[in-house]
Amino acid sequence: MSERIEFKENASRRPSRRPRLKQSSTVLAGSALTGAIAARAYAAGDETIKVALVGCGGRGTGAATQALSTKGPVKLWAMADVFKDKIESSLAALTKGQKSRYDRKEHQGFAGKVDVAPQRRFVGFDAYKQAIDSGVDLVILTTYPHFRPMQYEYAVKQGKNVFMEKPVATDASGIRRLLAANEEAKKKNLKVAVGLQRHHHAAYQETMKRLKDGAIGDFELIRVYWDSGWSGGCGLCPAGMTEMQFQLRNQYYFCWISGDHIVEQHVHNIDIAQWLRDEHPISAQGQGGRMYRNGREHGDIFDHHFVEFTYPDGTRMFSQCRHIPGCWNSVSEHILGSKGKAEVNRGIIETADGRWRCRAKVANPYQVEHDVLFDAVRNNKPHNEAEYGALSTMAAIMGRMATYSGKQINWDEAINSKISLAPEKYSWDAKPPVVPGPDGVYQCAVPGVTKVI
Ligand SMILES: NC(=O)c1ccc[n+]([C@@H]2O[C@H](COP(=O)([O-])OP(=O)(O)OC[C@H]3O[C@@H](n4cnc5c(N)ncnc54)[C@H](O)[C@@H]3O)[C@@H](O)[C@H]2O)c1
Image (tube, rainbow, N blue to C red):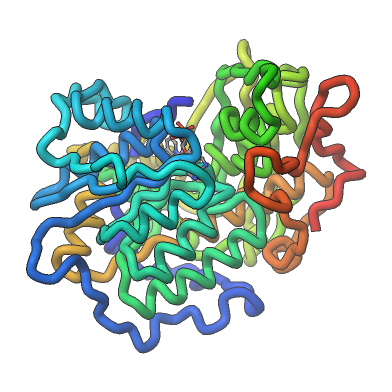
């Protein structure tokens, strides 16, 4: 599924006039960076940063492309995926070249920088551990978000620097696990990037800075959208394939793996509010369902969500995401303030004094986020984006909890929810958390009935 290339780095996130990020006492106690020790940034005596790619699909291949395009010696050293063919196709694209939709360039390939001997191509559910343990300095985690917390935890345990894609989990237990691992990452001074690339987009950066500096006064209403006509569908499980294999081949359609549209994609837009306010919402209520994508071939996710998030001072954020053809479409973020308004995605701020439009030269944010990460690794600069990545993901999960349950959900009960979306075990013959009913349809959430906390 394609995502629009629009967005930059956040190493210089400025303190805002707004209250600091409110952290759930139960989950985030002691999250201040204390006792940080300088971790070995990369192998002593060798300037080459060796990289493991875990999750060799579209984004993984793109992220590896960007990693290999950073300054200084870099080598792709190991690859891991649950499916062998994904490693093969990614390796071929990285070696021989491809047109990458993530940087708009045709690559000639990185043959000189790709050194993934057959014994360092790992397949299966535990492949990530083998890749992480193969002698690398940095790990790219671009599998599906359900697996991010366990893979991040292991990478941190083994002292690796990390680039991980958003979202960083699909349920609250995953968020708690990832945040706990991140405390270790901070103590070890590991460098950690999260693929919320708007933070690395020059126009977003400049617009957000102006807003945080008071350009439109106090924020009164935030509206964010990921409405598109993408229809999709994953077909039916073919004979000879286990249900677990089928679901992992079609991750987007299964909430336990992808988190549903509101988490999987719309987190980009929801994240803008956390960035703006330096705090997470305290509650959410909303509605959603499946009007168009509601057949046997559409897994268990909704095709539309509308959520009203509330922040500590009572400010609301209205969030919409929809995947239905033939409707109004928008992927955007809008802020109404006491002295004006902003269209963040277009870099426009309007007040009584006039209209400002950001003219910043925008470098590809997918590349910039890797440039910043690798520079931090090489030069031991502070860099850890996991916390805001986790809190924005959790806000999106709370929104999904609201649309699935039809209830008002509070932050503390959401982040402490004991309901896990994980299967009992990870193997091809294991039963996934959701399976088709007698009519072949996957049971999806029913507002008013479904329990989320
Ligand atoms: N920031 C962005 O703009 C952006 C754009 C696209 C995708 N993404 C994110 O990147 C992630 C991957 O998306 P994608 O489009 O590349 O999907 P994809 O299906 O193309 O690739 C995912 C790969 O991970 C592998 N995988 C899944 N579970 C695994 C596991 N447990 N261990 C090892 N390998 C596993 C799959 O087999 C597949 O090859 C998602 O979280 C997605 O939201 C972000």
